[in-house]
Length: 565
Image (cartoon, rainbow, N blue to C red; front, side):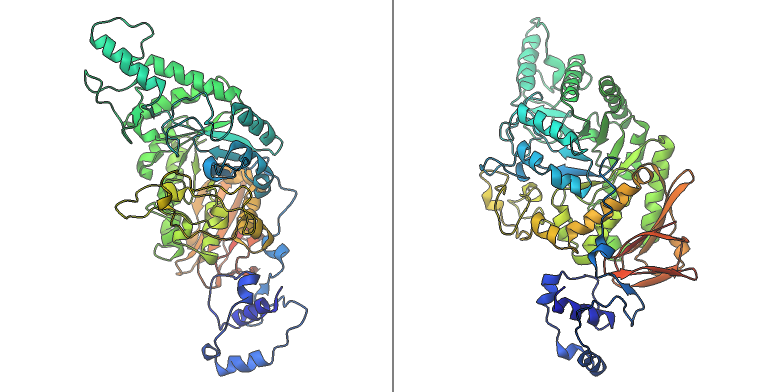
């Protein structure tokens, strides 16, 4: 460790610098401390310090044992693999990793990064739409049986699926069943058949009812999102038969799950949506009884909980994402009381579980439709958000680049409402451009104004206290208790801390007799609270201070997490 880092840690330990963020060694080496900001007492103490080759392991001022050794802070239990992990990773293939030098991410790029993705502890890769489409984002599909040629071939896809098995990784596809592209054969044939039938002609194997037409001239049709996306008529027997063929096709290719786009808009009616989801789940289970589905149902948690009555395995919890009513930003910035936050989670988890005991919430910080967390959080607060999200019950998701705090947000300028800047190229290295992708929307490079991070995966892997290694540590702990975190019932224990400090949160995850207690200190200050447990089993020492338990009191460092029994 560099001397500049030692000196800064020493200053923090004497309480003269108050910051939640633990600097990396490179940042600390360049730090400058103003002598005007240091009291005379501090100056005399500093002048008496001698920088030895031995790292101090105890902070005499605060009484905390220091964890400056990476193995104490972010040591990974290498006996824990991703085999039984329930943590998932969302990838926008176009922006992930390019292997053929054309600036477009491809399926071979995903395959090339399987070792990295396994090392992070991910089990399932959710690939945003990889089907042919006229748009960069791919949510208006023209052919559900082919691979977008920009991303590779069907052989490339099959190779990815097969290779992923060697890394205990499953592939999940983004399945868009609410609508199709108006450039698809489905739309064109439906329009043609519809007009013929309006003329009194008999059409064999007609697809006239595949699209929700709104007038006799087939000029107007239902389109929930955009003119180029025509809504399917989900009551059509032909549509359902085609959907079954599509599901069977991809399941036989080795796909293990679907992320279902726009579930809320299937019928714009909860009971009908639930019925369709049940049909879809039953259909897929005919070909793979363990097939998994997670639904995008962007609505209030009160409405979402009713979808737990469906057979769909999981739904995303938008209410706790960065744009949600109970978002981590307000919690971490101490605008929302941790007791209210925990009670909100408990309420929704118990309602959903009462509707179906095998329902799993999918928590996430952000996704391709939301600004990235780095817009609002940085330093140890960012790390604390990672700790919170990946120690929640159910099946959490990480959006690619979150582990390196990538930047990306939609602007509010009149000419810039595109989500493209939320889907920017992954950064792999500060020194090499190998695999680097271009701005994802061709012809709109004028939108490419984001000031992006310079350090990528390769850089942060080498920094023991980086965002990436923090995320890796949290996921490693979760994977150690994977079944419990997935299936356990969430119960708030904030009141047991017996503190009025808002940024401290405790909760129990229990499954029968098995349980864990998670304590988060989201504050910029170290804390001492009444312990909700009797034993510390894991800790994430974000600010390098090792927690302690004595005489019923738990001492926990700023922005750090303790797991207890």
